[in-house]
Each structure stands twice: as C-alpha cells, then as structure tokens.
Length: 233
Length: 310
Image 1 (cartoon, each protein chain N blue to C red):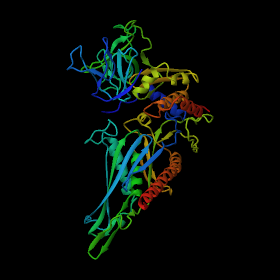
Image 2 (tube, rainbow over the protein chains, first blue to last red):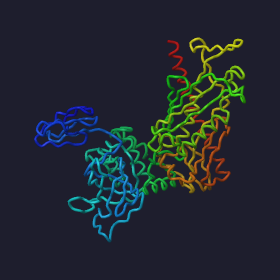
Image 3 (cartoon, one colour):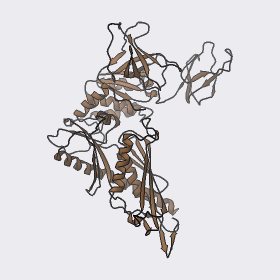
Image 4 (cartoon, rainbow over the protein chains, first blue to last red):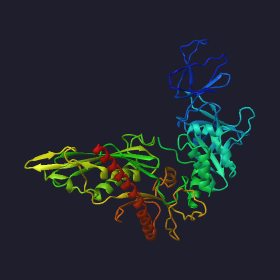
C-alpha cells in the first residue's frame, strides 16, 4: 500500500475495470463511464488496496457523516410514532424503527427510554434523506451485539481513533484487555462504549483512549504502557 | 443548537464515580485543570487555556472626556460575547443564560470589587481620563468558562501597560513607548474566580493506593459533610446538576485571603462549616493559580526585555 497526500478537488489516478470508491472520493459527473475522472472531496492520505481496485482517503475528523453499514452508538433523543429519533452525532438525527430489533414483533418490541444508548448499524445513508438505523444483522436478522447498551460509559474520540480501534492489529484494546477484563463497543461516529467491573478501570480506559487519540495526545504503545503503569501503581 | 443532555449510562457512571471521589478526567475532586497562559505580542493580550477551554482577553486604551457625574475616574468597560466559535451551543445575538451569568460575574469581580484603581486612570480632572476596553473572546468551551475568562481578564490587566502621559499647562503629551516606558495599571488586588459544583450526596474518600491523577494534591477533608464539592467542573459534571437551579458556587478571592465575590444562585444548601471549608480549599488553589500567573508574567517580561535590548 502506498499513500500520498491529497487535497479536495484533486484528480485521483484511480483506474480499474471494477473500481470501488471509498470515503472521500467522488466520480466526477462530467466524465463518461469509460473515461470517468475520480476527484477527491477531502484532505487526507490517498490509499488503495493491493490490486488497486479499492480506493479511499484516510483522514481524521470529528464531525460524523453517516455512511451505510457503519456501526454507530446513538443516543435516543425522542420517540417518533412507532420508532425512535436517535442522535448519532451527525448533522441530522437518525430514525430507528421500533421493529428493527432482533425478534421484535408488533406486540413484543423493546421499550427504550429517552437518553438511553443504542449500538446500531446505519442501514440507509443518503445525502437528501434522514439516516436510518437497524439493530440487527441484515443477513441473519440476529442481534449480533447490537441493541441497547446498559451501564458502562461512553468515551468520545476522533473518527480516526474509532476506526483505529476497529483494526484488530491496533495495540490499545489488547493491551488494556491484558490488564483487566473489559467490554467495549466501538461506534464509527467517534463514540466508544466501555464497561468494566470497577469505575476506576473504566476511567483508565477512557483516559487511555484519549491519550492514544491522534487528535489528542497521540501516544504510541510504549507511552500508553508508561501511562498505565503510572496510573495503576 | 442545544447540546444533548448526557445519556443515562454516562450520567449514572459519572455520578457513581463522583460518589467514590473519582472524576472521568482523572483529577481529584478539588483539582483544577492545568492552566496555560500565553502572553500575546501586544501588551494586554493574553490567551488563557484551562484544560481545553480557551479564552482570549484583549485590552486597549484611549483618552476620553469623563462623564459629568464622575469627573475623577477612568472608565473600564467589559465586552464579553460568547460566539458560536466556542461551541455550537451558543448563538449570536441571543445571550444564553450562561453568557448572562458570566458577564454579570465578570462585572462584579473586575469592576464592582474595584480591582483596578480607577482614580489613577484620570489625567486631567473632568477633561481627560483613560478608557480601558476589555474584550473577551471565547475560543473554545470545554467547561467552566467563567474561571477561565476571569483569569484571562486578570492576566490581561496585569500584563497591560498604558502609555506615559504628561500634563503641561492645558496640553496633554502622550509619549511613545520608545520614548518613555509605558506604565502598568495600579491594581488594588488581583481576584481569581474558582467555581465549585455541589452535589447533594456524601462521597467516600478516594482509595489511597491508586492515584488516577499525575499531580496528586493533598486536600484537607471535611468530616461528616453531606455534600460533595467538585472544583472546576467539566461539561459532563456541570450537566449532572439540575438545569433549573444548578448548584454552582463561584468564589472570587485574592491570594491575600480577601473574599471579593460569593455567587451561589440556588441549588444545594451549604452549612456554615462546609462553606468555610470550601473557602479554605479555594484559598489554597488560588495560590497555585497566582503562582502560575506570576511565573507567566515574569517570563513575558523577560522576553519583552530581551526583544527590547536587541
């Protein structure tokens, strides 16, 4: 993988018969289908997959723009008819249908209070429409971890940090997990829910995430280890 | 747009952590966030950072004719408008309750407590006085903007130098800073504001074997207190208080143990013992804040002299 820095409006040399564009890239409208130009819409590092079929721009931000199939942590901001209005940190509230839960029927569906938290998947994200959420896996229709989050605490971080935490090779969560058991749900909207046995450990997780955030402290593994030793001693 | 109220898990966790004398950012209950003062290129331009809260204070002066009723006093005006730059919760043109509270408190701390000697701002009685204009720019709101704004304002007043003037007969001669060094303001005292959030429950003392904070400040404990006081509340901690009557206690006091302003608008009742204890805690913290400001002023002065001698 190579990476180059691009700015919004730059033409990106992405060419592939089966081209897939990720966040930050747009097919320019003026081009025809066989000679379409790809334009970047964001500042960041241009990256592509090994066979050059998938292209995207890696950048860090704090403002969430919903994208389909991303898992997010939302806060119920109100009821709307059969469903709920959910704040997912974007420009608009998302809607969550009352039946979009595992095993929910007309008679038996979860009753969520205002200000409670849900872990959900964005099922519809369109620039002209309100985003929609679902609390089950699209294929299996099982919960797969989605649903209401009870207890714990929510840490807010930059979008880049939440993407990094989803990377299984990132050091932070395994490092924390080797010290004490923890439960964690990472939302792509820069919210991370954590729950541990004691309040102190939850605070440690929150502080480590903030310290490792590239938008905050930006500490690496050795520094976070040092911080942990300092706190836990 | 109003900021959303904290979610149920966040609220419950923050309250239970406070009951165990722990705070989310790792501070002890009576610890303020790190202060960072940047003295700008101009005299009387100071940017104050309190954690991630940032306020820029700027002072400029001009000569005006004093009003008839106070011919012997200079004028200080404070302009503090919170723009949406600080946070999306604020709108222009419509002052929020917080903005009104901050403006009133600044007025009390800086003007009504007579921090600056206004008579020394008089040049010719009834003819010419100095008009100091203090403008506060709220750059980022990460909680407790009042303390940050007051510290920025006080730092700016201490940093400011007005041009030297001389009265010859009827004329007033203003000297350029290169001719005669400008002179600092005469200040009666330097008040600092500290804000406590009060919660109506007793907290168990923090476990001693673990320190979540890097700078562990020993604080005197008050036995049998039915309230928990939290110094320099974060936005989450402030949002745990009931919004109708938030139990915030703001104390303005000087390092010389003078209490200038006490501001507590409703909320949890505080017993006399608890109140005296809070004042005592604030006294200790004020000394830390003062050390920070004095250190910054000395450094700024040394730098300015270094540039001047070149």
